[in-house]
Length: 262
Image (tube, rainbow, N blue to C red; front, side, top):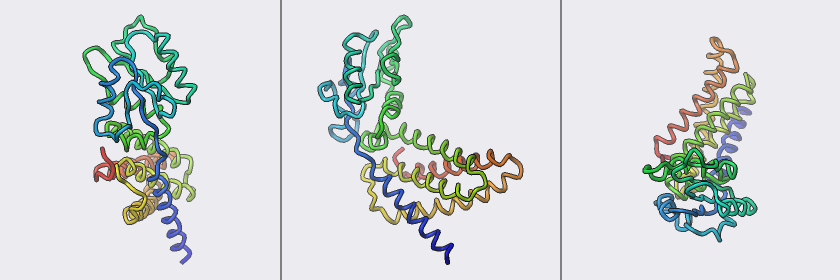
């Protein structure tokens, strides 16, 4: 009876975690400035919510989520001033350098988020999207509002979750305490992937409860699989491999079932 109550409590806790994850913080707009900014803004804004991406609006940098600035040539005085102004406003900057040359000053001195655009290749939207996701604090909400970011953010979500799961497995060892922590990580991954879908709400209780129950059951299977693998591999390595593998499999199942847009 006590065990059943404990499991019910854990399911409720996992459902609560999913509800929290499906209410992501509201991200600000992406401001695109510089050369060919209107073209890049159109590509980023394809299918996006109105106002999620705006072009040539440097006066609206304050309150933006990310500033994407396109420049051709070495960083100019105006480029440096714009980056510093954004930094003072607390807005991260992604620099897109057109047609880079070896003799030019690297723009990494201004920001770590730099994308090179080679001549004749068009804007590398996926690379720009990755830098936007790296720069933003609210990248899951950005991806929900801006479809071109879905794939890169989904990949980032899965990759970071698999790494965290491996660490939980390796550091948790054979302690039972690692099982609920891993289940929580996995259910949060499912929730974050679901939150990328426009229109997802925390009121989807049947789906939320099902995901929580599945994660709980998977956590028990994981513990047994790790115990068996421990007979042939070092304990921490076996735990890390099983934790990472099951987390990846769960995330891929969610993506393939189109619970999240990919």
